[in-house]
Length: 171
Image (cartoon, rainbow, N blue to C red; front, side, top):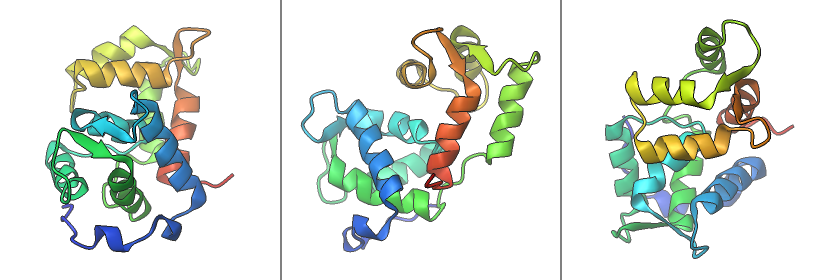
């Protein structure tokens, strides 16, 4: 279980790989629609999932307590978010599915092995099975994962992006 750490600010972002820090920062920036260095606290779960981190609701709650320990509000600052999320990813505190598990799950949904899935097909699965995404989370997933040219989810590219973040591939 994720524990709230009072030492979160003691670890500098310099302790993490530049690739990880950049990816977490860039992903945060996508959700920072006002471009003011904050996101709505309700978006944190969606941002984490965009990074390939799939916390349970209890883990998400613990992370929010840690992120907001110095500044409880309806918004999360980029600095607080990055300090906690970089640590969580780099230490594998929240382990999501392994890359081969994700690949097998997508392959089940792609019996013809095309590498592409209909966004609507994924919407049904992701909002009705397992730990369900809510409408906002699904919309954000679609915006992140759907190819704008084809309107399909290239699940292999999505898997590569997620595993690059989770396993800190620097290539």
